[in-house]
Length: 326
Image (cartoon, rainbow, N blue to C red; front, top):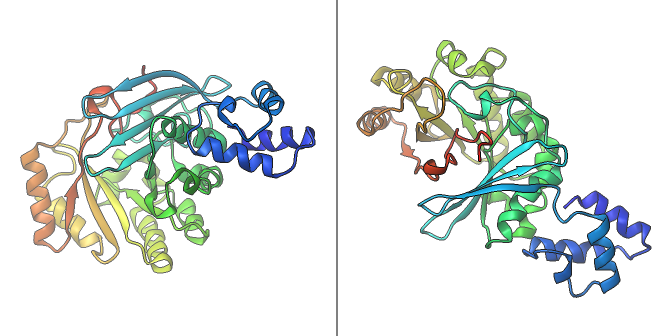
């Protein structure tokens, strides 16, 4: 829902300010349309239905994985593709992975989104409507900005959407922003008033390799990015999650594990090893044995790590697979 348009429409109709709050409370609670908002006058509900589309996005396709994951492909009003994912876990977590851009301009070589043509930044309402789509299915309690795009390049709209999330049942402390290392955005998030978790996609322990995998590293080196992350930790006292996708023969050797362990302060960083999810890129994923050996080498040198559970791979909904394909 375009909340600015909602406010203007209600003001033009001479309605009191509390009407906007009422409409939002119904929407955040999972209402499927204006007709369910029974504490709004019938005539007003009809006027809103005509003037304010209930969503800024149109659902184009929805796919359901064997593990309960749901992927939604949306189109914006100007035809831009956007994907979002609902992940269901046995412990009761209902986590949404949302996009902040249509496509991505940063072209990480292992990521399907990076191979797409970049469209544009999404508005706060377009980001929020991805969450509201899944809220109409069931209650939610976690969210990560880890879908299409680099959230730190659209941070104002990302934070604008995040401010509304507690109304949907998703607290700020259960909200995370993942970045490929856009240092100005990390610094801006650090100075903001939002107690949101930070995750860094690192994927290599040294600059030459990281620049091959992730061209953004040529602009912001590992040292600069880690300095920004450490400033975030110093101010927030919240550990930074580091994501490391496991690519066979590329970044998964014993020596690279030792390098990584020396690079990351275990008091500041938590490490997630991510099995590679197939895309059209030329990489192969590390074997489970190689991932286990890499994890053991890290722990041998003082850095603990977890291996991320893959969700939605059979519908191209897993990490790195979003490419707006129905």
